[in-house]
Every structure is written in C-alpha cells, then in structure tokens.
Amino acid sequence: MVVAVFAGITGVCGVLAALAGAAGLREVRRVRRFGEVARALVKRAPGDVSGEPWPPRPSLQFATSDGRVVEIVSPVPPSRRLRLLDGETVLVSYDPADPRSVVVHRRERVGLEYGFIAAGSVLVLVCGVLLVVVG
Image (cartoon, rainbow, N blue to C red; front, side, top):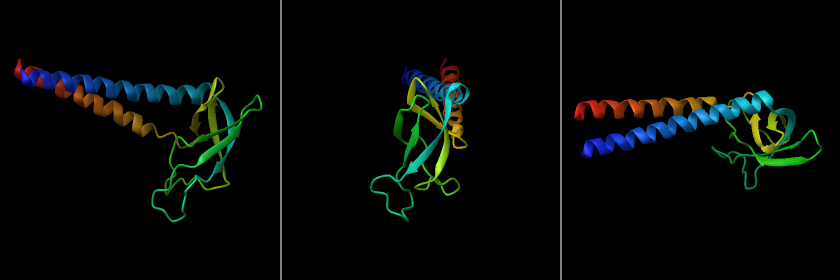
C-alpha cells in the first residue's frame, strides 16, 4: 500500500515535470517563430557589484514595433561565456500581445526544458517499475 502511494506521487510529479518542460519549450518556440525582433539595451541590475561570482540578472530595455518602451528583467542570467554587459545590445524576440514574454537570441536555455522532460520521464518510469514490482 505504501509503495503504491509512493509510486502514485512519483508518477504525478513526473508528469507535472514533463508537462512543465514541454510548456517551456512550446513557449520558446512560439515566441521565436511568431514574435517580433528588437534590439534590447542591457542595463546593470540595481545592487550589481563588479567582480561578484553570480551577479544579479540585468534589465533589458527595448522598443516595441508600436513605439512602447518596455523594460524587463532578463529571462536568462549572464554567464562567463555569454556575458550581458551594461550598455551592450542584444537581439530579442518578443510576443507583440505580451512584450514581457521575451526570448534572448542565442541564449534560449532550452536545455533546462529538456532536462525537465527527461527528469519527468524518468520519474514516470520509476512509477511504472514500482507498480509492477508491487503488483
């Protein structure tokens, strides 16, 4: 009985993780395919101290095709390989209906979404194995 409950919880968590990864991938692909492209100015995050090992995410400021200026926190953090330095510009795709939904070109981080799908699949597999062993 206890193993069956554990298997059920594991299965539900696995399905939720896989669905979260699939939804994230779908959103990235949707914005990349149907979104509008703009150049965004990288602005230093408040409280950013140079030399920090993990600086906070900077802001991205861009103008939409209808002239609105949008400033959001970057959806991706800076890394050693792909830095987001104050004053530089990056290419972004945004959803015209919701300009806060942004994908930064060459920094999509779809590996994280694939990781959620893989982890969820493993949990569903573990659920199945537990149910077969118990049943």
